[in-house]
Length: 214
Image (cartoon, rainbow, N blue to C red; front, side):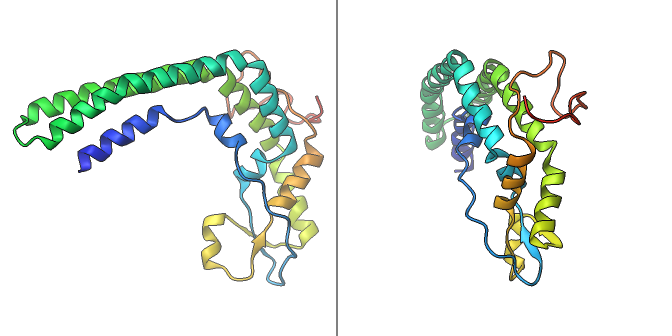
């Protein structure tokens, strides 16, 4: 059973959609609630960035500018899934057959895993241009996260901010995410989807301290 689950997981890895596409589909934050007396709030930092107006606008630009590349990735992804499916079915059949030699099963599984890893690497290479554009847009919004969080905390009189996974251990907290999104929208009206030629995610940028309007 463990082996069958492993095969399914490998196949699912090839079906993962482009990162920025999944992020663009993140649910919108709920309307802000009144701050409780305890001054404790929960903040989904990633959700705030992905739901900011600047990032959502950037995603729309990327979908238009990289339409051909995105379609090519989706078509290749479907072809790779079709190619891998019979191999996974064969391995699962061998797993269910008691007389299958262990060496045969391990060899088939190893070859299958290599094909999956190769498929994932190929899709990542194909998607790299627009994923890079999306990462650049996210980083520009992220540059303003600290002042956005501080502004939201000050406005709401919040002293402690927790991650969503910690909320089960807290009573009386509320969601600060919508307030941070509002702050981000004011601080970052728009972002660029064209990173400098030598830009890499996380490295210092000359424009990081400049006004965000582009």
